[in-house]
Image 1 (tube, helix red, strand yellow):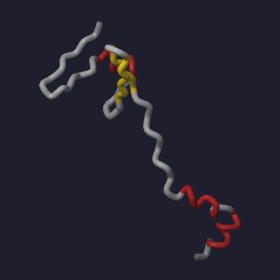
Image 2 (image 1 turned 120 degrees about the vertical axis):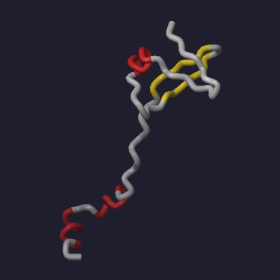
Image 3 (image 1 turned 45 degrees about the vertical axis):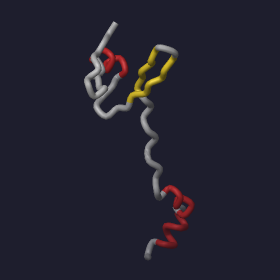
Length: 72
């Protein structure tokens, strides 16, 4: 069994074997699930990339549009 201690600020270090098994790196998020008196820890899925703010303009991105607006 792998253990770690809780600090006075309710913080702990995730032991190296756990970090290695979950492929955790600095900045990764961790997800917890409570199952009765057990807690399951896993690497949280990566956040979806931010939506392209110009993606809604793709309807005006045809070759005809590029020719029509080329000299503006």
